[in-house]
Amino acid sequence: MAVIDRSRDLGPFVPGPDDDLLICRCEEVTKGEIRKAVHEGMFTMTEIRRYLRSGMGLCQGQTCSRLVKGIVARELKISPAALEPATSRAPMRPVEMTVLGKEGKARS
Amino acid sequence: MKNTADVIIVGGGIIGCATAYYLAKSGVRDILVLEASPYIGNGGSSRNGGGVRQSGRDPRELPLAMWGIQNLWPGLSEELGVDTEYTQEGNLRLGKTPAHLKILQGLTDRAVACGLEVRMIDGQEVRSINPFLTDEVIGASWCPTDGHANPLTTTLGFYKKARELGVHFVTGIPVTGLKKVKGRLRKVVTPEGVFEGEKVLVAAGYESRAILDTVDIDVPMVKSKVEALVTEAEPPMFKQMLGTAEADFYGHQTKHGSFVFGGHTGLEACEKDNGTPISTSQGAPCTCRGIMKYFPALSQAKIVRSWAGWLDDCIDGVPVMSPVEEVPGLFIACAFTGHGFGIGPAAGYSLAKMILGEETPVDLEPLRYNRFIPEI
Image (cartoon, rainbow over all chains, first blue to last red; front, side, top):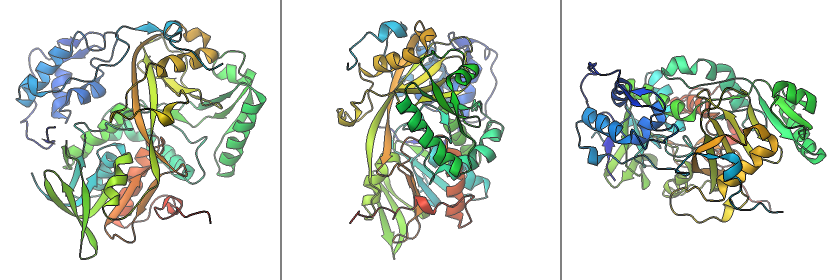
């Protein structure tokens, strides 16, 4: 497990021309918001997700997580391969409460 | 990496981050936070139902919960520069049977004795507050000053702000032990080397137990699992925090529109411990069944995500927040028993005062580490 010093100097946040690009479409999170969050200390995919809600919508990050990872890695000046993905969570597709509630039995 | 600090905090959850923030705000310049997991706020701080409650709390911790709600929560978003989504629209604890109402009456009487505004209401009044509840609900306890907030942005907000003030955070660095030098706590041992501090706060949830054991201090707590589910965003329905007398589910609708509901299967106490808290196939379905018994209208809401986390359950149900007499320089904040988020800001504020040797806003004597004594 990597030790990460959160006081590492990333240099100043420089706004980019494409900062208003929508990266997470479900939760409408932009590239600029993701880049800024890294400068605010969110150095991991899990923290980015918890801080901005990217990957927390209907598709649960199945669309945008690669893009987010690339942006975070570039901001941290590391390889995307060095970033652990955020945990995938059940269910794989959205399921209605009445359907999921049929899974298993309650004690009678 | 620097290896000394005035104050070393073991644990980067809401307690550690909030304490670091309030210490830095008081002018302490040299603070180091060591977090074992790769992530800030990875334990109960990110894995809870977001309740900011006073009703139902033990009289020993209620004054701290009330102080935080009166003094810290209302201005917290502005102070931290994040949206904590703090919503103070009350807490309904629901009952369906006379036995439930008896449980609720007991909780209400104890809270009123502590000066909290909470009262029993009938089914009709419950539905005037929340019209989506089934007619089977015959009464509830109602605390209008309770509420909820977003645990993720709040915890990371304390981290962000503390970091801005110069607090040094390191993640992925598990503390394996503590050592005294000349009778005072001095050294914090990790696989990456030994760190030295004048004062050390251990706020590492259940893992505090093994760390404190290295200086012969024990906090009687066990690890227990909670599971929760999240729905897709729904149109706004209600703003209250909800719970039930039977404790079959609890939760709220977030600002974003999704519902976050926790529940329990009754099987948690003996579940396999795989080292990480894992959602079971039984957890979310069981919670869904519980919710639909109270909110038939939510039966078509789609579940997008489920998650699980550990509680550090104290033997007597309230946290330990205390300096340690036998080990000068050591402070403990753990065993929050699932109540750590709502009282987190007030706990961090109080711990900062305690570490500075100043008076805490409320008396924390009932939460001392040495209150655990045998019956006979």
